[in-house]
Length: 266
Image 1 (cartoon, helix red, strand yellow):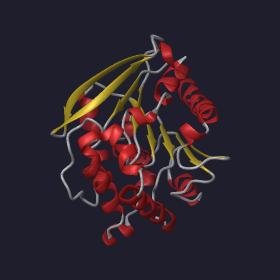
Image 2 (image 1 turned 90 degrees about the vertical axis):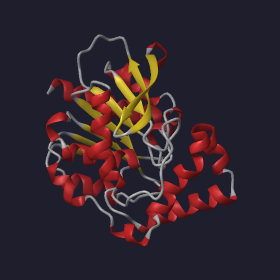
Image 3 (image 1 turned 180 degrees about the horizontal axis):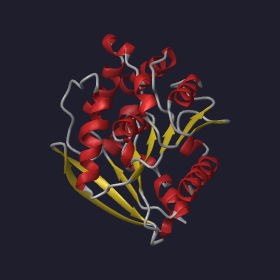
């Protein structure tokens, strides 16, 4: 079905940076909120694969996928990253992107860093968010998270990860990786958390995580379920790691599609 979704790539200027965006039109004619896809900490538009188009096709909703500052073909990042960069992405950059693209109501669909940003955005502007799909979000830092990031650093500097990421990020690869890896391993970042922002989220939330996530324990989903004020459902995906929408695509697509259907019926 995703092959029937039209794709239009462009660049917009948001929060002072030139960012690459891709608009997805499922051709359904549905006048509904946009699905806004927020990629992971090392992500880009192509790294989502066919999932955004498949979800737009299944739900009938239009979609926007974009590359944050420093990723893919967007402007190169200036280091060091501020320790509150996730909050800045949620409260400054994302609203600017939506404004530049003419999007009012939206449903953020975020993965990893992008899921944390989606939740922070929902807390920041609750009236503009119809719902949130959080996939492998971090709301507090765990030792497992830091261990996974250290392993990624070893794979980047001594293995093949740099070469693999360069296919998607080109000249941005070095600063992109350092902006993620070095920030998360800063001693001052060890106490980062967003638990205090969760009660401000009043819209429905679907919190997804793989049972074998190498970057977070089920405690992340538990904290989201306990913390948000609105309707919330946690879903642990069996036989799955940190990328549920790739590793268990059919199961995750069906779950999110059902969540979106219920949102439209309510």
